[in-house]
Image 1 (cartoon, rainbow, N blue to C red):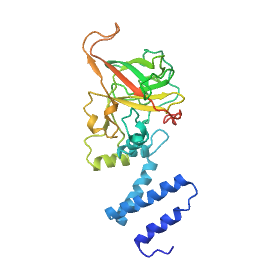
Image 2: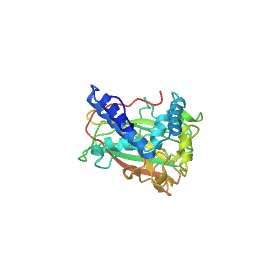
Image 3: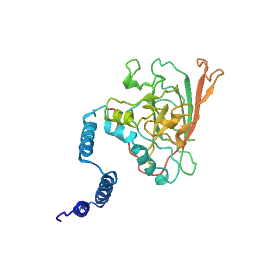
Image 4: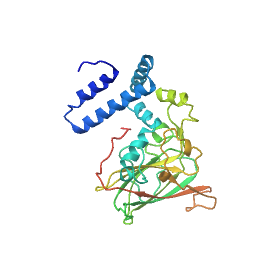
Amino acid sequence: MIIGDQNDLTEAVLDAFSRTPDPRLREILTALVRHLHGFAREVRLTEEEFHQACNYVMRLGQHSTPSHNEVVLMAGSLGLSSLICLLNNGNKGQTETSASMLGPFWRLNSPRTENGGSIVRSPTPGPELFVKARVRDGEGRPIAGAEVDVWHSSPEGFYENQQESQADMNLRGKFTTDAAGCFAFRSVKPAGYPIPVDGPVGELVRAVRRPHHFRPAHLHFLIYKPGYKTLISQVYASDDERLETDVQFGVTRALIGNFVRHDEDGPAPDVQPPWYSLDYTFVMEPGEAKLPRAPIQ
């Protein structure tokens, strides 16, 4: 159609996209056009601002590397990653869920570890942490034989691939739930850490005056069992002062774990106080069991 004014333009684009053969792609594209054009009208976007925005999007790609994805970092900083997770889990956003973001540090082939074993594979000073967890279905029944990947940062806030002093696969392990749907392991209490702010995401964090660019301390879990949707989770330390100001908006009530401090002798002779314990229950939903693409190859 010949465009007469700015209102005609939106109708012309919608009409052109209406012939997209794939129905889901057609639905997404037409909604995108309506909201994108509506956004430009609502904020009265200037030509200069439009060109600045295009340049900003371009720099997100330029700042990404095989080991760093600035686009995903931006999605988290806008709360979009958490929104997509909450929309697609917990009965499609109707209930609380123990699902969360994958994050950039998951690796394939973590060392298989016996139930109750340690994932500390090189000297890693810090308070000892003992985790006991259960995996259940929506009816509370135990899920036996589920594979559980665990990984987390050190007490200094570094993942093992970020710090040469840590052994390969330090603070990583793969467990299998027992007949009662349980698994347990020993580690050290993780610390929170900053996201990279040397690129476009950092510009946003500073421009909107976020109080900091840190993520609160957390443990990562990826739980896989055929017949169930793969559960990706993060369990946050209840004593972290940044729970309410996570720069990636990942903390939900369901994901706050009760990290209990103990000042008495530990559960093993070599454990000195203070040490911590965590008891947590994961709930898996029926669905397709598939693994995501590992951010670290």
